[in-house]
Length: 356
Image (cartoon, rainbow, N blue to C red; front, side):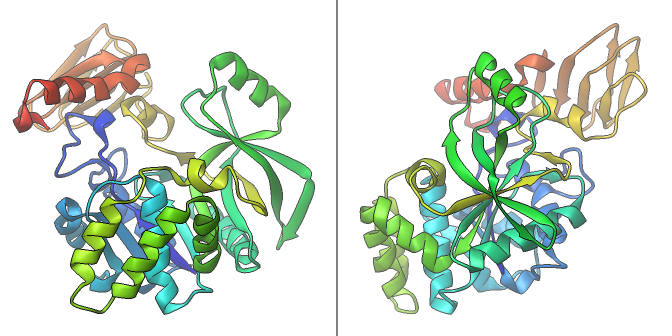
């Protein structure tokens, strides 16, 4: 098995700590080590670093090499521009297929939290076994609430294969992020899982499906693969990658593919999507406050506080997010943490490059 870690995200919902040059995957957010380093470390017993590929933009090459100094140079794949997950995964598959077209790829985001790494690896191994047989497999998280911020997977438990005690079920369909009333029905039915964005397949299988459902993208990928090892590679990569459609792997391939299975999973997963998510996994005090850096909380509860320097004091506060860096302060209700990206949008509109 090879692991492909997608490390190109911008992390705008973790502003002001997350910035353009050092987004959240390079930060320790509720963890001891930066999220990318955590991701690579939890793979180690199953996928050693020499079989780990990291895909990111040139802007982030330096921090990746800093966090993963033992990553082989050829295993850092640079995207010339941002083009969503289908081109990202397709590029990794095209390059990996030159090494071994039958290699199983575990495609993983760089910035998720996983509380039980041993269980995660067990489920990875089961997913990899089915992928080796030619199927596409994903890990679906057992939902604990009617979440509207995640896509869902409708699955059929009646069509299940057992892999060393792990259930691998047939996917009926992938569904978009639902409104709350629909999410409540999904939760009550017991037939839906959260879409974790983690996928397993051989390089050959995913390239075949890209060719079926995104034929123009496959042509660009073939041109890139043909140029590997030649002087024309940098120019070919830049030209062909930029010409690809910007589309997610879910929309471009998964919603149309056949022989797709899901492993219903529970291993302490969190997508670390915004500041309020820290309450789900980071250590909290007796009042439910998650505090990082110099801070005091008095008669305050259920708040997220992060400071990179100045002492922050909360008195009589509930359900707040307070983040302080050297040049910016964020204050918002916890239930508005998803909207922090709007701050970044407004700063861009005002030309405040110094705060991006």
